Image (cartoon, rainbow, N blue to C red; front, side):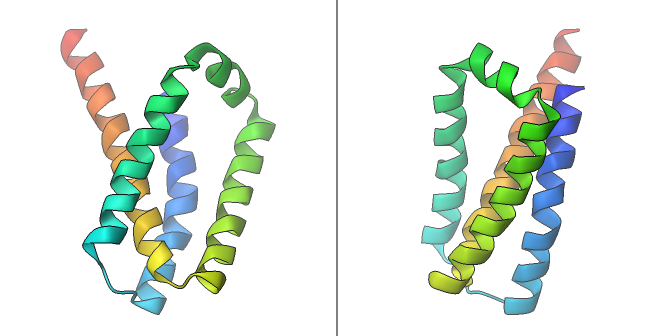
Length: 112
C-alpha cells in the first residue's frame, strides 16, 4: 500500500506541475533536468538513512496532506521568484521518483 499511496501523492503534485509546464512552456535545459533527477535521488538517499523514523512520520495522513500542500505552495513561490524553469526541475524530479517506485515494485514482484 505504501508505494501506491506514494505514487498517488506524487501525482497529486505532478498534475498541477505538468499543467504549469504546459501553460508556461519553460525551456527544458540539461541543468534543470539534472537538478530534478539528482535532487530526488539525493533526497531519497538521505531519507533512507533514517528509514524507520521517516516511515513513522510519513504514515500519518496529516503529514502527507501538509507535504502535498506545502510542496505546491513552494513550487508556486519558486515559479514567481525564480521563473518557470523550476517547473521542469520539479516535474523531472517527480517522474524520477515515480520511476524509483516502479523499480522497487518490479523488484519486489520479481523476487516474490
